Amino acid sequence: MSAQRPRIVCQFSCGAASAVATKLALAQYGATHDVQIINAFLANEHEDNRRFLLDCQEWFGQEIVQLRDEKYGADIIQVFRRERFMKGRNGAPCTKLLKRRLLDAWKQPGDVMVFGYTAEEVDRLEDFRDRNPDRPIIAPLIDAGLGKEDCKAMVLRAGIELPLMYRLGYDNANCIGCVKGGEGYYRSIREDFPEQFEELCRVQDELGPGSYLHRDRKTNIRFSLRNLPPGEPRRNDALPACSFFCEIAEADYQPSAADITSG
Image 1 (cartoon, rainbow, N blue to C red):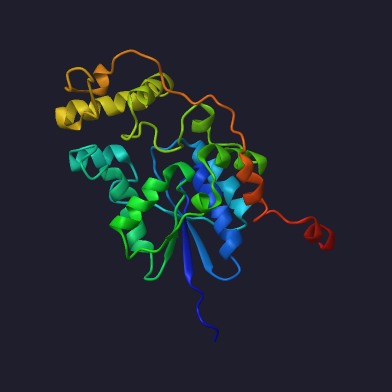
Image 2: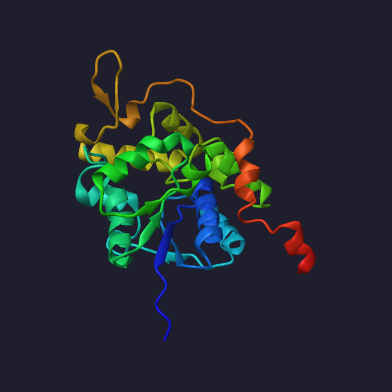
């Protein structure tokens, strides 16, 4: 019996960065490792994320294992109401309870994780390694010098339409009304998704000032989403464009002319 191949686990979040990171990991390690791709389903993401997942699954040529929380119904609103807070010193409870807990239950000893940190996020990678010295991780986008816009462009060049949230001008395709968002982000959510915005307002009405996400820059007093002041929504309307590093990275997973001829 042959020895079991070591596992590499790609965390696919339905975003462009994690898609390209997964594609690069498959190209680099697919022949020598057992590469697994996992996704944590979240009920509060835009439904177009599922379309993007299926398109990427075809691009990868491999099934994406979809994990789903049962305790909270994979719903951030249920997490906020039952845990009685939206964001704390150590981050958001939804990330821990709807993503990390699922991964911890699924992973195996010795797994090497693939993270979609981009070239702009070297500090995040270093911080993670400092806090988790015993957890081996790979960051193929940083290794390849690829930024967020590179990843969007590479997905488009692969013939895959970006998730709707990107097309609406959001920087990420995460939950509608992510608690990590700033004031400009929430002005966009208020315009584009009034029902989801109102639902978050009701949660803050129930939980009180401890759940408020933003502060007045002059008074330093927290205010609720319901009292979000008027202003410019934050949108990224730039067309994705590849840097010099795109074609170099794409060569890792695109067939060469010789391969096409021999095939």
